[in-house]
Length: 253
Ligand SMILES: NC(=O)c1ccc[n+]([C@@H]2O[C@H](COP(=O)([O-])OP(=O)(O)OC[C@H]3O[C@@H](n4cnc5c(N)ncnc54)[C@H](OP(=O)(O)O)[C@@H]3O)[C@@H](O)[C@H]2O)c1
Image (cartoon, rainbow, N blue to C red; front, side):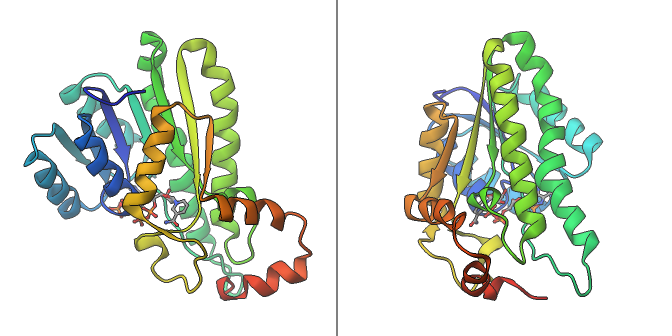
């Protein structure tokens, strides 16, 4: 989908990849509806983009709250019009610990990264089905392709998102709606700032450019960067002791 004059709703726009995608989408002439929980950051981004002439509306929302997300999407579409492109980017990353077992953290990750995306899709889908037009983009991760020690909940949320998106993509193809799943490797953002080891990491603006290119060509699934995607694939055949040794910095307890 070419984004000029399209209504694009983007979750997780207050930092990192979401912020970088919003900047590039605005430059390409999209009409933006931006969502996240932190209002000051959203207002700052809105002012920055409006100064360039872009159409930008914001909604402060926790995507883990279904009703709040539905209300935010209704508010944004009321101002901008029906959604052409929905980018479900909001996500949380935190380690999984077993001593103590951090159940609340793990559930929060699944609520935001998986259930929050499903709730957002629930809100935008009826109009897309009615118009027989639209594109849904889910931001997953290469971590969804391989269970990693110390990141079990995060990997599960992204693996679930990849599977959900794949089924939906096949199902919606006869309805005129495209589904694109993006699986980034390491990107320098707030989420990764505490990670000690990030092979082949790239900047958020560079990653956003790659992601938007995949969105514009309606890619089914995009994995990048190639070396990390290949390492993830190869690690499926690596013995567990080797994976544990290489990833020991990720394991808190
Ligand atoms: N950075 C990487 O290496 C990497 C790699 C693969 C995939 N990803 C994925 O890329 C996406 C963006 O992450 P990022 O790296 O850009 O991290 P980030 O800078 O921490 O951004 C995460 C964004 O999600 C929003 N968010 C988190 N929880 C939310 C909630 N409950 N409700 C609404 N918004 C929420 C945050 O905004 P508020 O805090 O203001 O709500 C923020 O705007 C995530 O889905 C992440 O899993 C990142």
